[in-house]
Picture 1 (tube, rainbow, N blue to C red):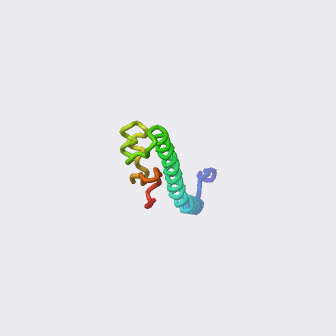
Picture 2: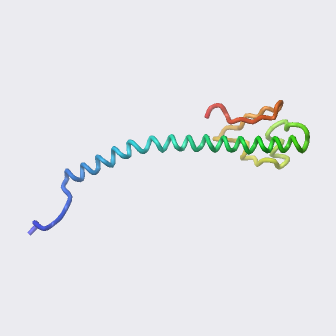
Picture 3: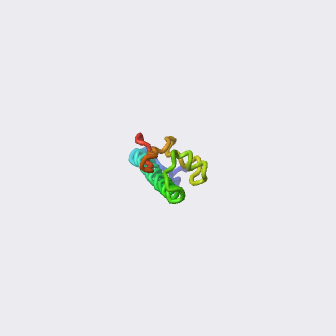
Length: 104
């Protein structure tokens, strides 16, 4: 009566679960690294954009902005462009350079 029924055995199911578990163990740590790498590249791109706006400000006024807030107030950048990864960008008003926060 039950001879023609096709089904997976318990051992087959356990083997499949073990293979899936091993694959997940290998894949999940790599996802975290890729996320950090992408965030770092995003910060680098933001620094480039803000630096370009500082250079534009310098060309317009022949002086460097006193702070990043001055760039925001005069419409060169938006408020959210002052931060990268919830840390404010580091701005040197003496030479007009901006860099990403050190603790990334």
